[in-house]
Length: 365
Image (cartoon, rainbow, N blue to C red):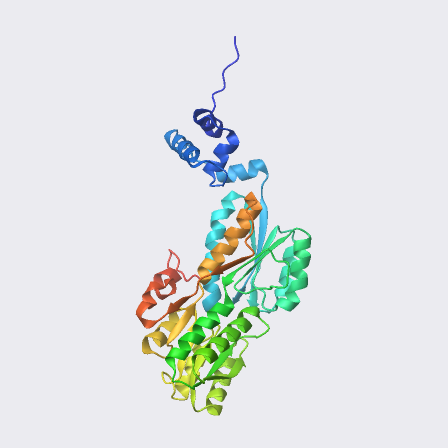
């Protein structure tokens, strides 16, 4: 008897029917570059016609192409980082079936515990790390050591620009501050005194926002001055206390730019001193507890940094590089948006439904 003829199926069958190589079919089915648009269309049509659905998890296991990504991002301030963690986790869920293992190692807050966390991640043989460097000077040697040994590092939200990190995903901080300064110059009378409440000036994001704001406000306010930059270290009690002392020292203060998400203590201090709404506040980002303050005018505007998208993009960039060799873009700057009372409902954080999971439980990471 003759040998039984083994019928082709799956990718080999698609390749035969389309008249292309198996590698071309693989690129088409998994959305990679390097394929002619007409060929892509033909391959995908044949795959649909024969009812082929790629088993991505099985493919990853069979090829041995599995990678590990560590994520070291703060838990607090929860308002901002909850959104970033949501983007990270939802994008990670798309890559887990494709052979990517994620090791989540959050730190309590920006700049706290990050050095030991990145050391532990590096020791666990990860292929890449997503990191929010609160203290870039201290983190630079650790980032450089990881990159030297082949562990690719992406900074997200804030940067360590003197390091050898592979990429950064953020809203350009100086531009963020420039926009806020221009807004403030329009919001307050000429020659006004304003102040900045920030987190830590050693953090690149905080420092460059403050510099951008000061530059544009002084240029556009016709005699206005930035009288003080208050470092509140992202602590609500410290922010409240220092804002009250600022208001006591500056009875003619016309505006405050809060260049981190820690704006509610500033609003509470203004309310305690009876100056809510009279001192114009420009805040940063958006969370549900801010909405009444924006609606009442206690917050005149906020500069939105897209934390959810930042988290998504950081994961996607690193995973695509490690899986498919996609090239890094050194700086990935997102466009900031201006949140006003009139467009408040256009932002995802203003919709309470997006803050809960499908089972109704809060999305808190």
